[in-house]
Every structure is written in structure tokens, then in C-alpha cells.
Length: 96
Image (cartoon, rainbow, N blue to C red; front, side, top):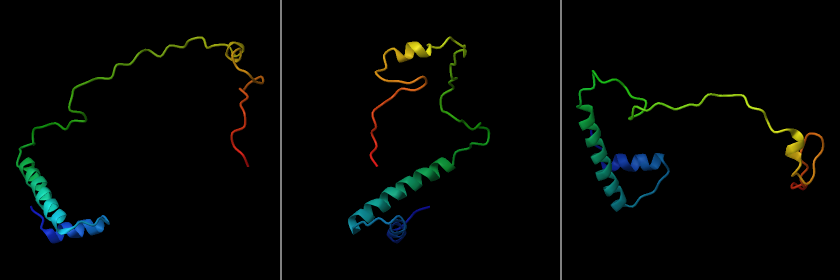
């Protein structure tokens, strides 16, 4: 498979891109190189190859999810300059 300048111009038009003639020529060469490489990949026999979700065989290491005692509300509010029973009070940052 290969593309010509006219097809590259059409692709550029669909992508709403503008290129001059020199850029179109370079893009045509580059796209043809990419398509030649894809043709090479299509020649490979992949019938007995299992699909991969990741190229490396790694497993995620997880720790046990242990329930721990939380910091008390009184300790949390000790360093707060202003608060009520449940929330930190902060200055208003949004004006109407």
C-alpha cells in the first residue's frame, strides 16, 4: 500500500491542516515509509502468538489493606486557626 501527494492533501484537508508543496512531498515519503513498515509487520506469522496486555511480565505488588485508628477530630483541629465542630473555616475566595 502507498499514498500519493493527492491523498496526503486530502488527509490534510480532513484534518484541517495546511502544508506547502515541499511539506506535502516530505509527508508523502514519510507516510509511505510507515506503510511499508506496516506491510512488513503484516508478513509476520502471528497465528501461535498470544496477545499481550503489556510487553513485560510484571505483577502489581499490593499490600494488605489493614484498618487503623484514625486521628481524632480534636487533634486534627488543634493546628487549625479557625473551625467549627466538623469543618475547617477558611477565608472566602469567590466573589459574587
